[in-house]
Length: 305
Image (cartoon, helix red, strand yellow):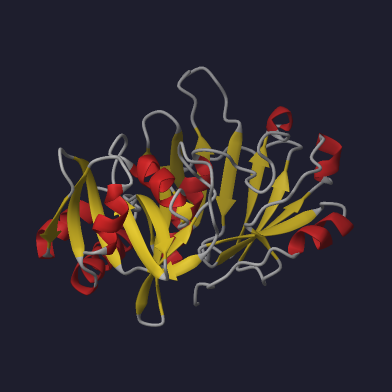
């Protein structure tokens, strides 16, 4: 199942012609079909312009419901974030739900995925159904957890990173909060580069190469792109008093990759695959720890590495 290099934008008109009853979102070559019980027009949703909406054939089909939740069963909890979401198994199916910080509150969003990850149902309480509906019905954090689940079966990893396309080359800048990803996005954008995303980037294998893809889930820099491009260099960001790139190899590079990604901690095979992908990245691509001063001089510094 090969990720797509480009994502279609022509689907918006056809979706409108169908009365917004359904649409397909393509993120990192994974196409997800959303089918609604009612037209989202009934919830005041009219603007569906999004670069992530496509007309490509769907790989996963999800039915949206706002008319009540299924009866609660005794499910096996396999992961708990401790505050915002939890994951269960029941008769081979995955159940993903939001968890409020208030222990007395009820579940407001629920995703039920079949064991083959090809279909499922999403339940959202009616009063939340007009928030972030298109093209991202689930909202944070379930939208990204769902993608992590899908990537664990379809191949790939979601990284805490900024992705840049510059003069035909792909640079992936990885870092945790405050490390400078949004600053990098702004500086490269001001120098006519394309920003895929400043905070969440997906990496997948394609045609023997490692590709990175933009996602809709940005940080402080709001411009995103659904493009997919090969990665040429990896940089682990840190603040510094001068621009400096230190090569990182083997175990050290793998460790730095793992601490900047979102692996499926509940899934042994998925974790093995995630570690394997990080080893492949470290072995196949030049990796550097990049100390930088937040001004335009970093652009030519990186171009000349």
